[in-house]
Image (cartoon, rainbow over all chains, first blue to last red; front, side):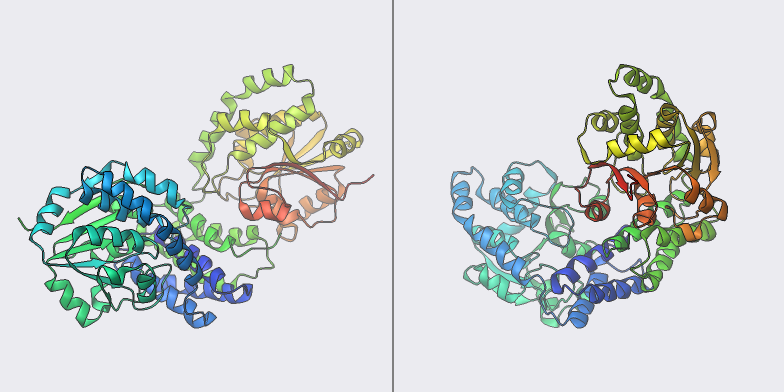
Length: 283
Length: 283
């Protein structure tokens, strides 16, 4: 997905939010905003927003010296999600279609997103999504692909959401590689967040090599690129990963809640819709 | 009021909104965003947001060649407000305190603001404000000042709101100078909008000389500055005018709805609160 004009003010919001988490020094935050502002003229609209995000969050790390501004927020999100695990398991047990319910749970976890200005209430939003109609629903294709798959590449999005991912990975019961970011960017999952979410109990955690709030293959590691080509099934969580891979030629299953109007428009759906979308499905 | 860090992403939103009204050429809009982005590092946080707005809207006029991007929107707002006039008069007739009700109406009109991203519904919001508790309520001071005043300087804000201003001006029944912007900026009232609102029937319309979405005395005309010093009573509508005059040493009555979190914080109130605030009241 390319960058839209609406993304530009949003880059400034993200700079401000992350800057405020990294420091209380208003002059330093102004410097971050100056830098993001100056960068706008360099932005090619053909790039994905996630590529721009990579530059912004790197400059926040460099200018403030804070490696992981969202660390505390991520820890809280994971802790909150873990408290919900037993409830999720009870719901799953009572569900007539366990796989579909586990997918809903993984998508429900996608509300935990601190890159957005939208506020969320995890418990409330989870219950809503567990009963929400899908705007795009390629479930039959997904079932088919899953039944044939030996290996799954699961591209992770946010910390906390990772706990919900664990439920789906366990339910699918296949050899799964759980790909996380190489460095902290917004509240996206990095290795230690995945471990704190218990992912190591159900999957092999790998770094995608990405330093962006999304997956831009050219900037990912060769190992990840190889896995991306070889995995039988690719699950791609969230908006940032959608941005980088929406036009890829591989068969990919996107699971997300559309929290941003630009991404909703790109998907041809409405804001707040939930999506299980397949591209390039093999028949 | 100084510029806060939160104002910076908002400047980019305003550039985008006004740019989109002026042109459908995405490259031209990107150029506007590039320019606003580059300007950020030049912004002194000691300036008021309205001063920055002056630069942004001038560059939109210059780059797109469109003199008044909000012209159509302003015409619609005025027409919609005029349709409500007879209802407003009926409400006023039945009101136990006509002056206070007319003030409420003038504040209700302040919801018509296209500089904000907040959506509004004029009819719905008007009825709400006519019954809403004031967060700051210096009505006694206002009554006192009004009773002694021979001349009023009424500093206008938005087109459409101007129709509601007309009700208050008529109700006060004093010699009133209605000060509008020198050039179009957002949906602020300019001379022709004031005439379309029927202001010329109740007041003398003057330009403040301001090209900003607010009143920065240093950038206003000498005639306006003289009036500002000599008028017996100054009524200052809306957020932009508040920004420029909140720290002035003259006695001023601010009437507004706080539509922006930054201005609400500066006033020590909550977003969506309504305000009749006096400063430097003579006793």
